[in-house]
Image (tube, one colour):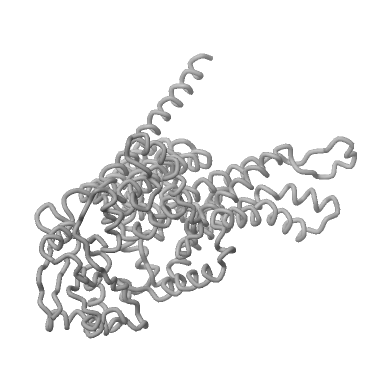
Length: 570
């Protein structure tokens, strides 16, 4: 009797060691280069919108007055700043929550928010393990966790102070809880309550735990939606899980004389839809408290999704584009082939988690395929689920192989899964290696400070040099610094079917602009779709023809970043 017990303990210990090794690998891949580019946001331009909102929340300005994203991530990162402030002060670095501190050295704020993404990215790996283990067994859970630990899309966004990976973590937490709620309710049957001589069906013994798990899953789904709007589609798998979790209680209510439709509406409303909605609103309260602003920004965001811009004008079919290059770049071509097979297998097997997850993956993919803004990050919510279905398919092939062929099938599956892991791992390592060296934007910043007179009025695009703004000089001088500062005029991003009033050379001359600094991250995408941005195309052509190109900054050996061009106006 002792041998089997020892064997079980050994397997548990081995699985624990493997899980820790996978989590350590996930953490290492996400920590490598996490501080690169600081104190500037060179990894992702959206950081420069997110981090200031989080800092404002930490200072008590809880209305972000910006609703292209929900607010929950701002509050999470802001809470992190508040918690770090005492330690920052004890280390002799002053008050972390002053405006001067943020302006003079934003590096700690970017780093803390990036570390939040690192932490929740690593937690996501564990949550996928839990989801896979609970539904398909420990081998499937471990393999799915390994895949998510190394896929380059998740690794890359875990380096960034943006909302995507945090939203995925809460989505996976919701699915873990919802799947548990569906499992707890399974197989309980009906019970005869004391005094119930007729044996009328009542809620099973596990009903309190089922209700608790279902409500907690709904809350987690609401928090995910309050981090990234598109996670609102979690209502689909949540509803399937709720049907599993509530069906016996609904049957009991119907047997007691209630109407079927009314019983289901009450159960789903109270256990799922209201908790999910409440969590969303509590975590982003100003969607109600500042509803006109929210509706305006949300409408504009929807328009961007519908029309696409700056790089997606000629993307073609959105469904195919999301397969290649997006998904092939996100998880690798071998893993993608396995994921497609695993999705088909899930529709064939139709286990409880299959029915919770597979329709959600298909409908989510179909939904974002209708967009024209086809950024790869929008696929992140379904990437972990595709990976789970992929490895489950491989594990099931081994389980269902005949004894005579099991060794051959096992070897083939191991080879294919090994290749499927190795390819994204190599891509993630390559990405981490790019987070080193000097960026052209830093080179341009130093050159401009040395060669352009202080106080010059410079028109700048996004993705250009992080120059010091003249209006911020008081903050620097209070810190004992006296940097070269300039007056800056931001040239906003061009949009199709929208007058580009910023890129007007005559206007810049009238406003006495001295220099114009442009970036290849903008003009390359504009010139690739000239019919969509005629005013911007004319602007860049006139810069070359009518003004003096003072300096061009191109990545040299060991450098990275966009090509920047600095022009002097007459």
